[in-house]
Image (tube, rainbow, N blue to C red):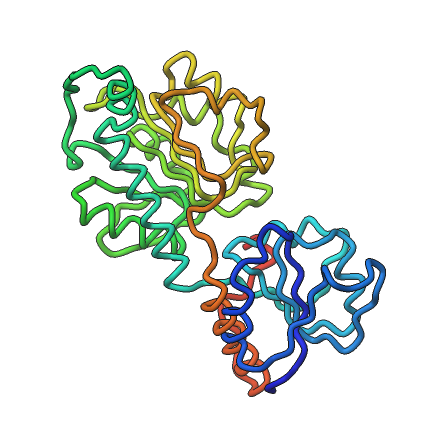
Length: 317
């Protein structure tokens, strides 16, 4: 249904690649919420693309039929005061998947090769060699075995890491040893580098805490385990992360997501030499690819085909 108007609601800082988005949508008209009166009711809008929308937005969309998240996550949608009973479609695309895997692999290699320690030595003009294990001596435990987690696992295995995976529900994935809820402790006891790629749900809120960090492996090739999170900031307890860095329960971290974003300037996380922090950029959505994805889903919907990657509301993702 070429030319159908589509509502766009995103935080202003995310309005990147608008020209590419328009090209990808193949002639569909884009109506930006940011350019409309704050109390306007959008009659006749069947489709909406959103990222961190205003909590009252959906009550102003009486004719909405399909809701598209601009990213893979959808927890930002469920924070609204009212969410209409329409299909919610997640953005799943190889561009997003590849970027996430690149970030995860980079962080694992940075900690494996102790790059932050060498950075500090460089600043001191101090020639010093550290003993470094091989990738095959490090077990990376990935939590969250969806498209992103499985792709990261494949690439880490190619780099030589020993990789295992955990998800709340049991999954059988060829070439990957997996654990489910009942096997969480066994999974943690094997893990040197803990990678978080979990969606944010009631069950995963605050899951990365001192209790979990204290169960990670401590008799391996590294002195203290590493926590790497690019899933959702709400899944981690930052007070516990800070305390665990201070007492050595964690030997290092890489965080792309935070409880509060932007990360406040007074957060102690900024000051740790063994912390790598990035501003929620591990897998920024390619707006051209997103536009093409939405156009394809609308074509499927209009022709009576099932939408892809629809959120299961009972699971929250």
